[in-house]
Image 1 (spheres, helix red, strand yellow):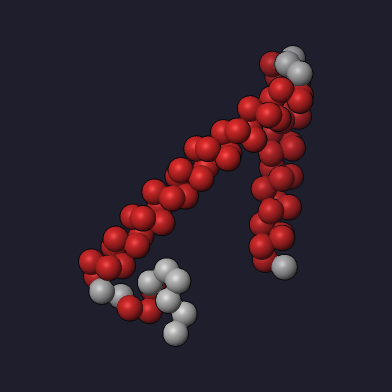
Image 2: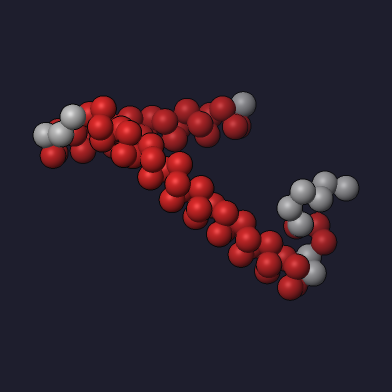
Length: 73
């Protein structure tokens, strides 16, 4: 439930941002949706990757065993 609700909220945000931007700029909504999707799929994933690497480095540096990614006991 949590994963699907996160996806639904993200898609609703993308939809409303697309509608707002298309009215603001008078551009084609389909092309704006494609641009927003590409930015999310590239820069969004890159930012998540950088964040996970940073948190993982801090966890290793502080030796917090219970907070390691992928270690579920």
